[in-house]
Every structure is written in structure tokens, then in C-alpha cells.
Image (cartoon, rainbow, N blue to C red; front, top):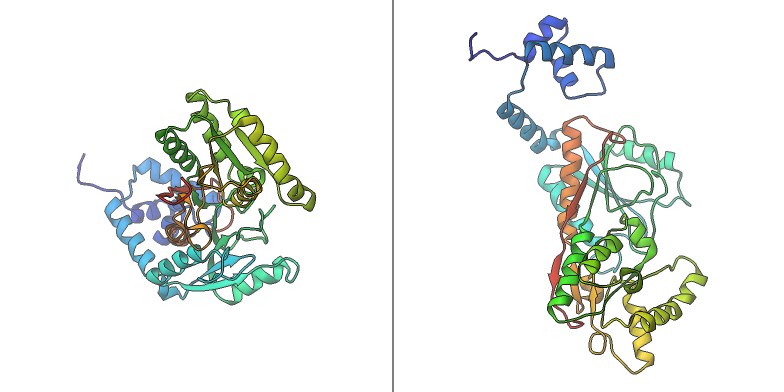
Length: 351
């Protein structure tokens, strides 16, 4: 047998009796090819011993990836809450900047669109996306707004990705901070400074939204270091007025039981801890060290802890969208992808 012989897509097309374009689409699971024909083509490819040329595939993908502008495709940055703005806290500006920079680099137009279910129906919003030539959608969730319980509209024709867990029960591709890693870094930093009673206080809703990464990560490393995670973890809710009114009291009760000599928490933990300490004439950082898991430079940039690489996450979201477009993938994925981006340690004044 000639070892130099390579089965091509044209060979498969001749055997099946279809065009080479159809073969290419079928081998890439393109939805435009009927399932029966797609299966026939794949079976023939296996029989003939077809193997794709990896260098040719890389070249074709690269050309499609970099020439997105020729299709005049747009990406939508869909947000709730505040419009992305450098001077507005909690506006997801860093996410937006990353999405914008990478969209421009790849030749996509970018549309920043606010979704408010009280003002516009999902069907109307989807119509707006079509009218503007949108091929991919990046969902961003502002702080202060919780999780979408379902996709805000049916998206069978769009490629899309979520920045974080923006959907409660629907598998979508998502780019998010590596919260498990952040907990590990924070805990080890506390150990290195000689702390023995390390506490964790975070929002229960946020912990659920990130698939329990905070508490699961803390539990593992706490047990490894002889700490009782059930005692040293405090979860709070602040969705309703009644829940917000109980936060300080419940946190005080927890601190009296657990007696932490340092607290690891999130941005939402900080004001409650600071208020509790202030009532006793004490100061956060000085009298009780604090490590923040989600520092925002424009809000609590003086804190010690971890800063999420939000611009990088925004860039990765666009790359994911571009990859889906080049592979003709749209709608809910059969298997969703999750990319975790590690946060960066920041030396501040609270630890």
C-alpha cells in the first residue's frame, strides 16, 4: 500500500455522491446537513480511513477567524444594570473593555445592549439582534443583579457565551474567575502570616451562583489544616429587606462563636464587617485582617486580596464566540465549555 496516499474529502464526496462542500460541513457537524446524510458521510470517511490534514485545518480556521470582518458580523455585549462606563462602579466596564478590544482585533462590530425584561420582551430583543447583524452574544451580569433563571430569549441562531454563571439551569459556555483557586491563595496567604483561625464569610447566593466554589475550596483546605469548616464558614443573604436587616446580627453571632483572627470574604462582606468593628471602636484591617476575593480597583482598591482579570475574561469570551462562528455552531451546546481564569494577588492595607 502506498504510504503517501491520503484520503481526501473529494474522495468521500465521490463515493457518497455529494459535493465536497457537503462533506466538509458534515464532518464539522454543520446543522445545514441532514442527520442521515451526515451519518452516511462519516461512516464512509471511517471506511476509507480519512484523516483531516491538521496543518490545512489550522490554516483554514485561522483565515476564517481573522477575516470575520468580511462577513460584517457583530457581537452583542448584553448587560443588565449600569451601562459599561469607566467612571461608574458596578458597570462591568472591565469586561466590556476586554470584549471591545478583542472584537476590534478580530474585525467584529460591537453592540452594547441593555436587557430589561420589564421594558422589552425577549422576542423583541432577539429581533433587534437579528436586525443589527449580530452573530454572537456575550452575556454580562452586573453586581446587584442575580442570576437569569433561564435564557432571556431563545437563541438557536446565535453563538453565545456567558461571563460567569448568568444562567441558573441552562448549560452555556462560560468564562469565569477560578474562585476555587482564589480561596486556596487567600487561605495560604493567611497561613503564611501565622493566622490560626481563618474564617470565610460570603453571600450564600453568590456561592450558589459559582457552583459552591467558595465553600468547597475552603472546606478542603480547612480540613487539611485542622479547622472545622462548619464553624469557620458564615453565609449570608441580602436579596430581601428582612434578610439584609439580619446580616449584621448573624455575622456578630458567628464571629462570637468562631472567633476568627482573619476573615476571607467578598466585596459584599466588607461593609458589614467594617460597620460591626466600627461600633466597637475597631478598624477593619488593623484590628481584624481581611482578604477580599473580588477587589474592584474603583471601589475597594486599597484592600488586600485578589483582583479578577476581567479584561482577559472579556477577550476570551470573544475568542469563544469567534470559534463557534467559524465552526457554524449556534444555540445551546451539547456539551458546554467552562474556562476558568485565575485572579491576581494584590497587596493592600487590610492584611
